[in-house]
Length: 189
Image (cartoon, rainbow, N blue to C red; front, top):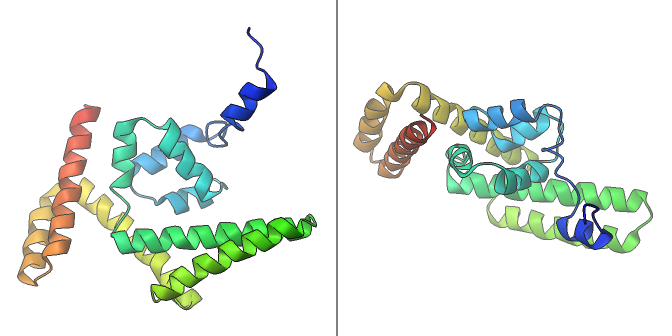
């Protein structure tokens, strides 16, 4: 009964690459700090972003996962960034399939890449410069989230300025970010 059968192994899938990573604690700490995006952490620890995303969804405590999601930035940035990840993954899979002579898989991955790129074009992302700007903006949102967490005294001033400039949606996001950080801090205490 102690041995794992092939069927049980197939049901569970392969082991999580992040759980087995020698720097797992540092990786999770970087994610939980809110200072780095999932994509930046993936690059820093030489992992595929989707592997880190799956790890966060399936193997990280809910309160830590909540803290991590507070860094996501604006929804449009998050969606565009995710689409860029999907396009990159599809391209990598297509190239690997071509290299291995798997024409059928290469064609499927090529179609997936094309559909994702089409979605990006419909969002107005038509060049590598725009894609790079999205990643830069995501980084700025991460820095902004860190500022809100580390210096809560500036939240009221930022909200006030944004509201005076008729940017109430941004003001609401900042208030929500600060409130979520406060709640996460209380849970951790």
